[in-house]
Amino acid sequence: MGTSASTPTVEIKVTRTMTKLAGLEEVSLAKVESFSPVASAGEALEQLGGDTAAFLRIVNEGLRIEKRNQLLRDNTKPWFEQDEDGEIASEPFTEKIVDSAAVSKLIMTFAQLRGYNASLPKDQKKAIKEAAKAFVKANAETMLQDAVGAELTPTE
Image (tube, rainbow, N blue to C red; front, top):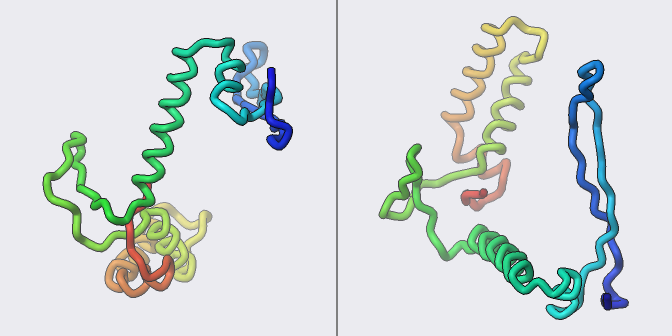
């Protein structure tokens, strides 16, 4: 099998956490194998034993992933709101948006500044988080633009 001399072999590792039947204890397992990236379609087909159906399936999956990544990065294509049933609105979404993880981090930061910690009673933690959320909500646009950058755009 011919691989390009300029393409280094890399290690592929897959892991799983399973439960040992004897004792019902968790165990972390791994499989490791070398992978040699190919430099041509011919080399890829050779690695697959000449199986063109497998080759096309793999190429199409890679192309689908690349197209998805391009779509995520393409700021010229609008986002559309999707409801809980998966139905997509007919008009583009035009409100300002920010990554949900950034909002959660900001709320937790303000909650911690207000005394939030894991040892507090559940009702007290909830009250502190709600107060922090209300503060962030009241000042959202300014605070979030400062926290995540000037452009408020959707992410994955």
